Length: 205
Image (cartoon, rainbow, N blue to C red; front, side):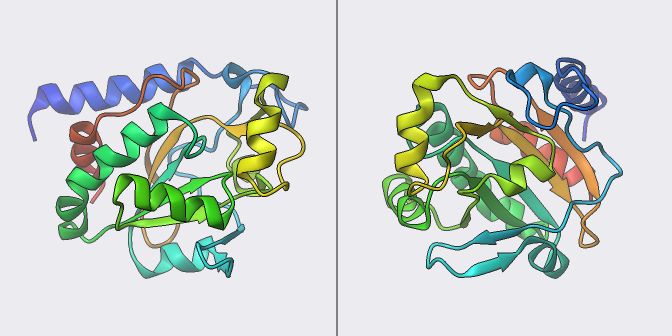
């Protein structure tokens, strides 16, 4: 790992975190810039998600099986998210070779997750956070503008009735659920590149 790449990853993390304004007492910010995410060194919360079959999944238990690259994305309707998911597919073998599993979370319903997997030819795990409980627990949830309401309700199977979106985020976790690296950027158009994500995974071993 070159010193330059290490500094780049560090800078990206700092930039992403500095762009979030921590607001005590506001559990659901109105802006992506105001979320209060979990930090490196903290452990992930207890949350229950659903797989593509609709079965309940305990995230902590899933993570305890393998170190995890955890992605939060807005939904299969978002072109920037689809581009990111496709990019992850390109580095999946290398990530798996490092001993990680890849898990991507969105407010989409299990049925819509299947459509996203087919559309992007994905082989890693997608899980549903239709009620946004995980996004809230990770501190990356915010109330999106009303114009997103119809899309979010439809894509979540009617469960996302509060217009809640996650700020697109990347967390690299060890088997204890401790956050070793994170990238959180309120600008949904800017995503961590597959190359830098792979480098972060290597550095987090």
